[in-house]
Image (cartoon, rainbow, N blue to C red; front, side):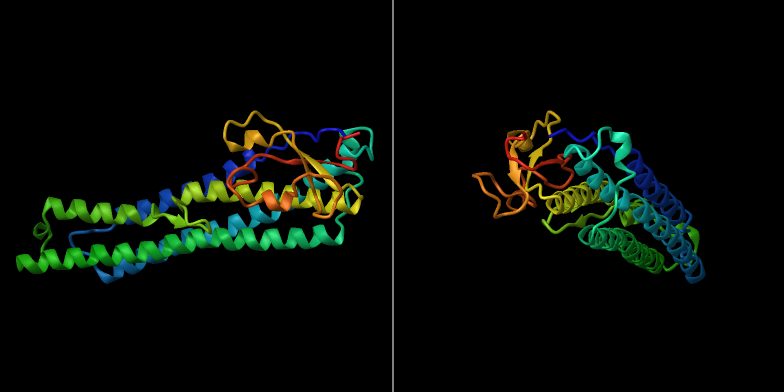
Length: 277
């Protein structure tokens, strides 16, 4: 059993996170241009239109990113199996032999669709929150002017203006709740999501290819983890539940808090024999 080369999608992940960061900055710029002392319908509609255009651009670019990076994660998983099982002599030869089996074709399609849908949740959340806080700011503006009986720019106090700015600032910083009921800020959620999705795609592709090549065991990678993952580094796991031997089944470990959790960096090196011979 040869250890698979370490994989790293950091550049790709930072490229995507930067896309969302720029978009959020542009949205905040649009909100900061609102005249809070005299919010007019035309101005509000123009702002919402510009925000929608920014989010549309994010959705288009992030969709392209997913279609580029997720298949690469699947391919890297397959490549790791070919190399670790000794099908080729050198890592350079690996990619000439890669061919998606039926399971990995379905995996690629599913992970692309799922990741795109999850990223769309982020921009939908930002869009909904932006509309909501603009409505709140508009109401504050109307109430302040009405209370003074004045329809001019001096009607709103400094405190109310500060409150309105704070309200608008929350539009793009509102938490997203994941399946584990954990609340994330949008940028943190995007970062966590794609890190987890790429590693999940890599591991799933590894298992699919390994089982197809009759390798029913795998060894969990080591990278000096300091959290609960450290207790599993280097451990042998079954890739199918009915494989012989007293080893944990990888399916029972995934989705928990100890190993293969969100943001987890661990991968699997497959082997046909549990002792790695």
